[in-house]
Amino acid sequence: MLGLFSKRQKPKNALDEVIFSMYGNPPPEKRAHVGRATALARELLMDIIDARDVQRQSITLNKSPIPYSTHDLALSVSLSFFKRPEYIPQLAMAQLFAKIQVMDWQKSGLVVPELVQSFNALNKHYPAA
Image (tube, rainbow, N blue to C red; front, side):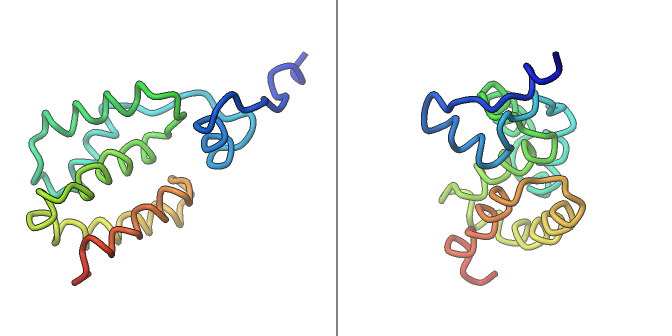
């Protein structure tokens, strides 16, 4: 009976392929705690971005089929703001501190490596980092 729930799934689309590559096949159930992820994202962003905007982004991303962990969701939310050109000047310092936190999360196995790679790619937006 347990074998029925752990069988590999066939990807239905490109997003499924991404999910399977990041989270395994079959991927885990959705498990992010949106309130905690919002708080963590606000910490990464050093409370520079309006709390309501961060919360809205957390809710929006959590509605996607991606089975984020709480820390994955927090990182994805913060990435969405770190990448926006209009926020780059305000978030330059926050991005430096967030790098340290993200490295700690990675060492603790709290975030998937692909999201860490996306975060590290911010260097092209924040050249002084």
